[in-house]
Image (cartoon, rainbow, N blue to C red; front, side):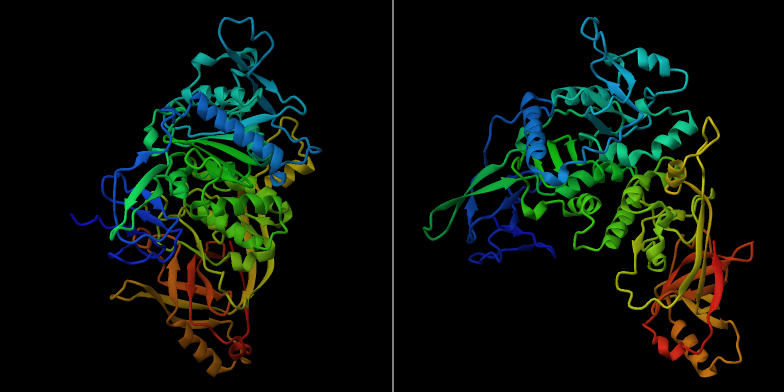
Length: 586
């Protein structure tokens, strides 16, 4: 019987190995498609020739069948102790005492004498560690802190009456030796706009100073729980004996299904939520409970039950490490601007239940990343012009629906936050910025207060939250155009009609040459244009020598962004005698 072929997977594409062929990399991963469910993956330590193999044998037959088992808890304790003792970058500054307004006390006074276990809401005690919970609220009704039940919460809540995810989080917190727990729905007054805005502005400190965050990965709502029954064989590393041809004997290899770390997390219900991006990046360490196994992420290390000492380099979540470390070590070699681009691109792929939360749900990361005075509705003053060069490449949202600007205002049109769609930046290869920003401002929504007075800290925090208006004044090459669509590929293109301002000093040959260059500009509109066709007469302004903004007139006489365009790189010297126009984009 001929041996079953290997399929080895590279970053480009999988290909079959022919009999007698050598592997190009002795540490590559191989997919075995025969007798192993779900295409298990093999890590090869030697270069085998084509060979037959036996059914894998379990490496560890003691793996528990539930993620809430004592063995899983013991492993979580080991990860936590290792991080606390050995990882300097994961330690917060003990001299800074930034604590949530409220916490759940899991050992309230008198709890020992009560017939049933209770917890209570309390003001944050000084210097006591607390844990946090990341979870999906879901569509089902769940218990929430409201203005009319604050006193009841402070008196005591029976744990038996709480949803499964909350009960499991309490169990994990106590098992790790921590007394206090923060859960958003139980620690923020949900029907108080004042309290909600105040606490939302404090998310950066709530999660950044968490002792450890608990992530309920696969619970679609608060009743789903953190703990799951599972097939232990999906966790185990298994030994695989490969029989080599021509009397070369046999070799053993390790086989595991858990190789797609990023896929395991990104495809979970929890990480479909846009809010959760900052809940993943900000905490120094996170314990993740999935339906197949528990996992660990901190600023230094990633591990799981399959790889308890650390995941292999091939599947290490480098994007998460980069994001966590960039906020704590700003002197890293990688450009900080790229960090913010990556955050926005990942954030735009998440789901928001309330579209008005677009800027609020990323405010925690923004407030740690840069100063309030430099923040303008999702972009940064020092990189403002390059930050305008974003687009929605597939004109769709995370759920496949067409990209759209919501009817209710939430950001200026030049900000990515004005669009509901998957954002991608195009400025990373921009060679020369030729426009200038003369002025840029946004107006923040100030939070209501009982006293009617706002502190300087309140005003600073509000700049990272909701905005009610904003504008930029730009000076650059500007003009009018018509929009056409090529039938063969449906791509939108400009037909130039006018370059402004008209000036006697402008060289007519330069103006004509610029028109010809821009006539073949490729255009990306921000919204799906079949759903909302753009006006036929549009405007444009060059930001760099090869990219610019597509605009339309607003009712106030200023301009609004509709999209962006790309042309073959221009020589700025050839157009230096064409006067620049100054426009306001809102």
